[in-house]
Length: 88
Image (cartoon, rainbow, N blue to C red):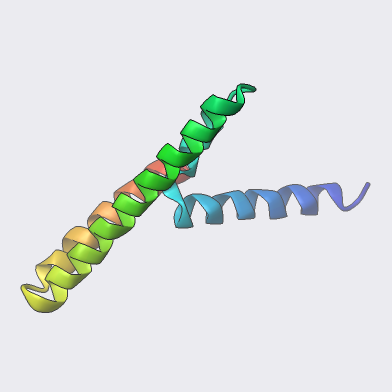
């Protein structure tokens, strides 16, 4: 099938976008066949994502209201997280 490499490529791009937007989705890789465990992992993943975006929002607020250097801290932190996740 000539569309297989294109489909694989599109799937990889979609996975990378998912990791960038929802970094805690990596936790879902450990999902098991147990329904309770999968639900717990999903809820933990969502909680981690909420906390992460709250931290990002807080650093943006600090950058706007306190000192511009908080933007550098935010950029460095996000860059490190994304680099680590995208090179898994």
